[in-house]
Image 1: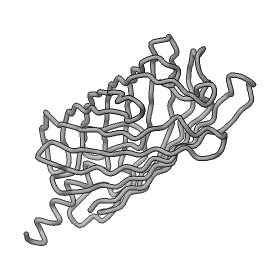
Image 2: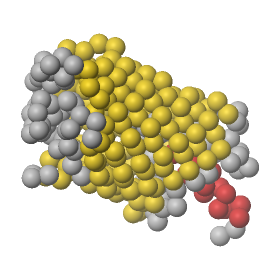
Image 3: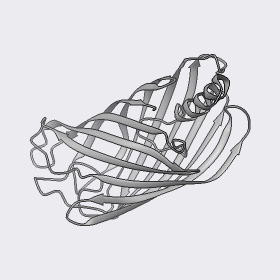
Image 4: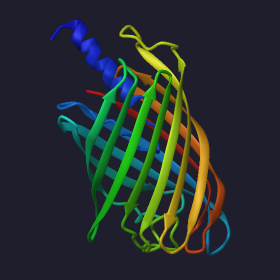
Length: 257
């Protein structure tokens, strides 16, 4: 493989992956034989439903995604609670497969893609989840739109904090918009890029609880490494069976090899 070919592969891989926001899925995936480890720390400020006290719940996510065939990838994710509020048992490993069933490249970077993903959360049972996501990259702009469903679970160490942990199944609408701040034109000679992001999420639980969060973020993406961060705040919520979200901060790092 020539140096020019390697550069083109890295350009296409990192340009597409760079349009994936930290908390919203995208219809992108590693090429066959490529691995993407990712670490994301999430801090969730919430109002304790028992005492009304404001607390912070922390989650450390470590995942490894791998391209296994053309338009197919697999990801294994482990979640660990950080000891901020003595809540340790609300997170379990995930095994997920993703299949990209639609791709229309409009240029060296511009593209439209759709993918379906699904898998199981591994606890005492195998709890399934399923999602559909659409991604469009148009020059400096990137857009992701997704819908997902997952099996509800029950928190066993106190009042539930997160959506989907009050026993009801969870539906989620998510979207993100990314704008490349620098460089204006991404070329084979470009070695990094900066993006401004806006992410929004609307989880609806089948017990009637729902909330809408919205917030800005930043993404730095190099040829093999990326750093990302996002802060989301509740715009509107109607929650009666779990804690009310006050804010959510996500900070992450990923690499490509």
